[in-house]
Image 1 (cartoon, helix red, strand yellow):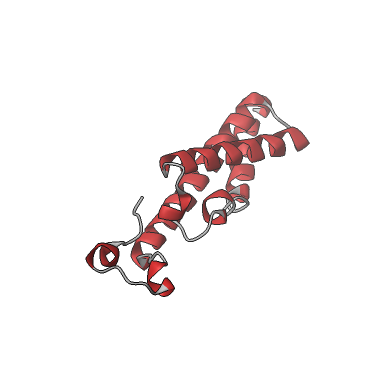
Image 2: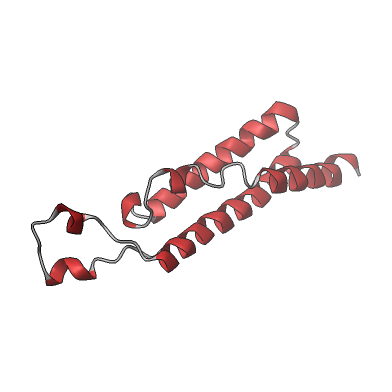
Length: 120
């Protein structure tokens, strides 16, 4: 993950409070968000296959999805070194963004794996 840009902070210290704000590179922020969405989509697919193979049905499968997404959030936070503000402008980008985005993929692969293992 790419961090924020502090190049101006070491050159010149100013007494103005506006210069103390961290600046973020837009390309790095977009790349970091792509990593989060790809990771969540991949974990949704893997979680759906595992839920289908284990034979989870109804509410148990959805609880499993939220558990997988919570573990993914913790993993992404750990990958960022638990310093979220170095890579994102706010904490909910890594914790909540895309949380429900992978639900369709999860349900698709959940039903597909369940049908393959338990019905056919």
